[in-house]
Amino acid sequence: MASSAKATEQVEVFTSTQGRRWPFALAAFLICLVGSAHAQTIPELVLEERYNEARAALAERNASALDRAFTEVLIARRQGDTPGAIARLRNILRARPDLVPARRLLANLLAETGQYEAAEFHFRRLIEDDPVAANRAGYTRALRRIAALKPFGLSASFAFVPSTNINRGTASDIFRSDFGDFIIDEDSQGATGIGFAFSAGAFRRFELEGGNRLRLDASTSAILHGAPEYNQHSFTLRATLSREDSGEGWAIAPEYSRVYLAGALNHTRYGVALARAVQLDDDTALRLGVTAEHRDYPTDTFLTGQRYEAEATLRRRLDPRTALSGSVAYKLGEPEAARFQYNGIEVGAELTRVFESGVQLGLGLSHEWRPYRGDFTGVSFPRNDNITTLDASVFNDRWTVRGAAPTVTCSLTFAQSNIAFYDYDVQECTIGFTRAF
Image (cartoon, rainbow, N blue to C red; front, side):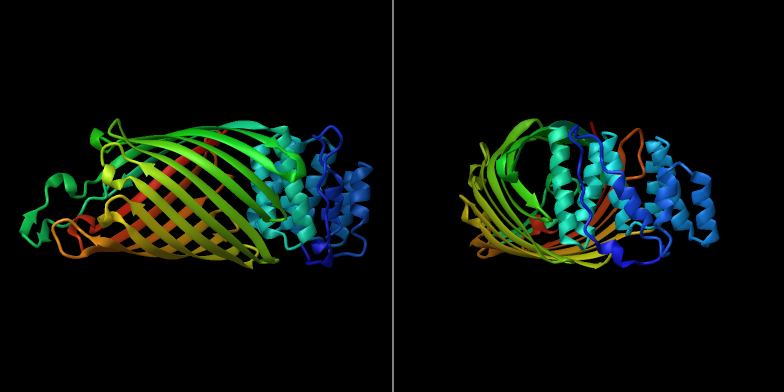
């Protein structure tokens, strides 16, 4: 399809008074993008149900395959075959995932047919991809209407997690202390295995005055291994008050969680997170975040205390299919024991790419410097860690197994420490499926 100035015009996204009918006028907008002075007659022919004449007109103008595909979308929609129109739009986006008008119409049709999770996904993609600020404001309003139509929901996921080091144990055999060398016992060394992870959650959201939103979440998760001593499970409650408009917004989220290891309570966590998103220009966004939490360890009381983190992430869209992000974070740990208190800095970068097949690929690299304060037990110097992580993820929302979308994430972590217990490597993958209800 030929490029056109009309592709950047403002497009309103709205519902009727019933809240379920989304605008067929957007379909006419799509056809107006055809690079012909006579293209405006095509929607007229479709609206008058003169389908063969519309096809013949395209043939006379030697229209592209993409323009023909759009016409078939409109014909299917006009004939009442909304599922067929959705399927054709998905095929178009498979070939051209950067095509904002096609994604816009798909999001509207998905919302019209009650497929709210998929519609939300595409509206959020549009907020990232559409360079027109007024359009992004319309997508934000659409997300609010979806929230009003679907005020609660459930989700579930499961995954296989093969790992070379499920307990993050050391690869060293000897701990060298001021009092001599000691052999590190087998339980403190790395163990390989395959974990089975699952999670389930529910949410309830409320649309408040002034465009604000309150969301309440409850979730549970677990990862089980062949060795029960490595099993973990947790319960989390969270309340999020937020506001979002045209890709900008803020959020505040208090959270409470309990984490169990091998069936026993490991720690209780009370925390709050603050976030601010700012759109610097059409292609650049800045996200700022601050978290503060208190952890209470009933057994390892020396770990009880506060943790803080402040992070800034800058995301730049390089082209309609590619984005690059960079981040920097400051981390502060204040447990009771001085040997576990730290000041850390982490920097990272991530490249994301959407391919013509619809596959979404993410590649990330991060490094953290974490020096501790007090001398470690048995030595006359503090612990000092350097942690490097490489990760890659693959996702395609069009691939589903009984409604569950698969995701594959793999990571390589290299932790170097002057204390042998914390010197380890990990190669790990998560092969999971998520389903929203």
